[in-house]
Length: 210
Image (cartoon, rainbow, N blue to C red; front, side):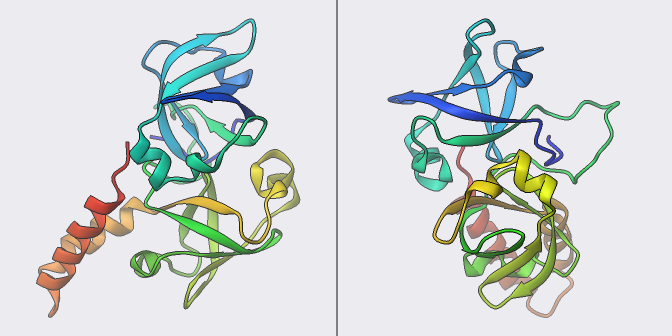
């Protein structure tokens, strides 16, 4: 479980088949085999590392490359990195699973960021609600017919990938998991409950990557 507060802006060192190598420093401080690290909001598992040279590797399936923005990455590209939250940490953002629901597209750059997302995610986006964009916990300013807008502060653009991305760039989207649970719990009590539950189940199956 993550918080959506990016710890470090790392970069892609290279890709060899399923192995993705990331250059970084901060997230290597307490690294161990099998540890989880979120890369642009996608939870990956550490399989190798070198603290002196400053890199770690993860195995990424073709399915994950296809269903997330990770497949767009090339050597030198910046990535947002975050280690899992500990029980005694402050929850600075919101509860983030590191399970990408879909890939969105930037329509307008930060600071007045607008992102287009698939229709299946629209019902989870509400004014002042939480959403994760490339692993960054953000607050929805206004839901739109085709996506949502976010007001991005200068600090966020400086320390994350959002300051380096523009229209047409793809980003990983994870909606608030609490909204999904609320929908499932209430589905059976709504007039169209059965249809909503079926739709939720289909969306979940399509959105599981790693």
